[in-house]
Image (cartoon, rainbow, N blue to C red; front, side, top):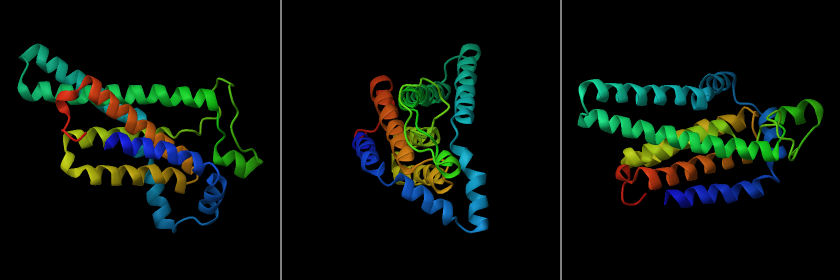
Length: 207
């Protein structure tokens, strides 16, 4: 089920390429109300990868030290496993995403708005043009996919939250819609496959 969601979003990114400029310009010229815009700006970076890696890496190290010095308790072992599962998923997803960025080199919407420069700059091997896919979307959909394995009853909620944070990137016109969609797809697929291959003991049967 989770895998098919990721594949569907990945495939949806292809036709969305044709709509990206129109959608980005719509959000640019039809911004939300001032309070809503302020809220979007304040919350969007909750999906940034760095803080998640820092927190989850800290949890993994803390539980490892706890187990080393005080013995391997059931709760500490479980916390260590779930932290490692998300940490590895984020790393796998980030490596995949940044490889795609390096190959494709897509310009951000601001380049189109300010300079009329739009599209992909293929095979330049730098991250100056780093719009596609969205790293924020990758991160938050990694987290949602991971959380769905641990608390599957809340799966719709996790993905609703992830969708909100992902869409903030498009609404704020810092990413194209296809950037968000494909970033989300990579997050879902990389996390699901990482969990299935390396952490099957954490997964529900439907995963």
